[in-house]
Amino acid sequence: MIDAIEGEADSIVATTVELPPRIFSRIAEIVRREARIELPPSKITLVQSRLARRLRERQLESFGDYIAVIESDAEERAAMIIALTTNHTHFFRENHHFEHLRETVVPMLRERALRGPVRIWSAGCSSGQEIYSIAMCLLGKDRASAEWLNRGDVKLLATDLSPPVVEATRRAVYSADDIEPVPPAYRRRWLLQEEDEFAMSPEARRLVTARVLNLFGPWPMTRQYDVIFCRNVMIYFDALAKAELEARFVEMLTPGGYLYVGHSERLIGPAAGSMTPCGQTIYVKANRR
Image (cartoon, rainbow, N blue to C red; front, side):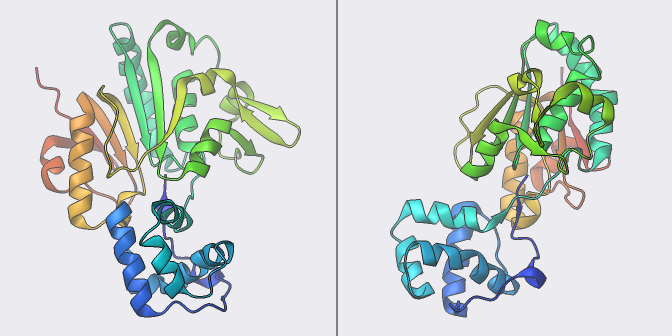
């Protein structure tokens, strides 16, 4: 989950390189064009702080020099977008979603797996806590409860805009503080202690594929998904971008599939007419026959 450009102004260390408002506006336009993320003027201090390191690494003396680079260098534009996204998440965040997944959706998926493939997508996965929370819900509390996964074609996709956090998802190693929200039964069965860190078990990692993906670029997936999580991502897009993305999610869902969004997010536009609320920020697609 990308929580992009969060309000961190109180913790920002001032830099010696000033970001003029006119240059900020040009940066904001590039970010809007490349990632559809909105940067209001109130974020100027945060952007200045985040990009100061990029100036130092490129040995540039001013944001005027930097804007000239990013307007001509696609690789640096991508690095800028990554620098301007904060990846904030934890295991079993907004736990009511995982309770619904366990109680309502997993039994349905177990039945579906007898007839064909099961696919789940975490869009904006950050460093993997969401997708592995989903994986543990599917695995259950012991190996017997996970046996259905061995008999079926069940795959989980985790995507994010940022290559470093996608790599962290692939690595799937977390600190003791990170795993604190994991229920004890899951922790005992599906996390393996390695000195002072904890690695996801092979059973959990085997389910997950992690890929870099810009949600507003082409989607290479050809199969529909039974469940999509996209939480605390869309609040940073304008209404047009949000409606476009939500409509694409609906198209990507199987009939009867579920979409989970963040606690302050709601469906708008065509997606709102195609999905039925079935819980707190949980929607189900009409199961047309």
